[in-house]
Image (tube, rainbow, N blue to C red; front, top):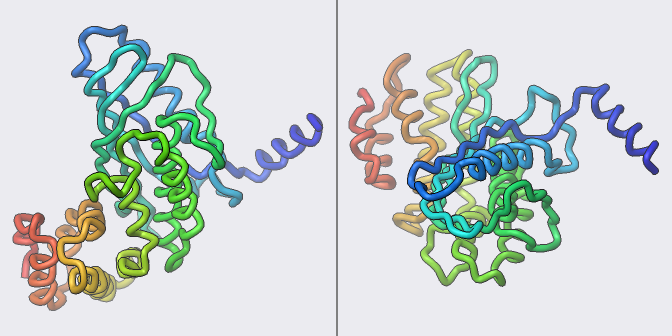
Amino acid sequence: MRNWILAGLLLVVSFGYSQELNCTVKVNYDQITNANTQIFKTLERSLGEFMNNTKWTTKSYGQNERIDCSMFITIQSYESNNFKGTIQVQSSRPVYNSTYSSPVLNFNDKEFEFRYIEFENLLFNPNSYDSNLVAVVAFYANMIIGLDADTFSNQGGTKYLEQAANIVNLAQSSGIAGWTQTEKKQNRYYLVNDLLSNTFTPFRDALYEYSSAMDKMTDNKKEAKEGVVKAVQTVSKIHSTRPNAFITRVFFDAKADEIVSVFSGGPNVNIAELSETLNRISPLNSAKWNKIKF
């Protein structure tokens, strides 16, 4: 058995395959003044290794196909190996024929509490809930992979989003914040539930349309801009049935700055309707939309 495992590892290395994620993990503990800081450094290192060395899918990824992403964890309280804080999760995907990467996910999870003992092994079992720390980061690993797949193929990330939903289902019995529908409607439960809901299909449709448009930016900027306008119009379908939906905010938390940049130079397209749509469906970003040049 051991020889078979070694042979498999050598085969993977020989073809240059690697895990799915290229994840940078940072742990900020500035608010903690009464603890040995080494545990936070160990946590940071362990999470980075866990995210980047775990095989999350059955797909083979080349080294240059790994998904660039980051997790920025802010520890707000720590006592007796119990941590509480927030986790900011971001991911991006490369734009075709360029050195630019387009943001896909930018989500700030404010309900992050867990127990961690320094140097403990972090292991993910998709069929059980063993640790809130592992469950949360595994949830976001699958979210990152699922949304990345959606940018290359419409609805292409469904099986990974379903895995994230399975993690939610397993974690609900823990009683720890962030996993249930009885809490505020901006947590992990609602994030993946909305993405898999037929009601909010326009989010994933728009993500694919938007990314396909960005892939044309080098060759045909005008056509690319028109594609971005179309993607925004697709997102607006959500507003027609669910004004101020959480999932609409998730889209623009990732894309707002890029949209402003896209329409602040280059060939002109008719953006009067775009500006009206953006201000209607994402009024929280109105200051940014006002920077778009007509």
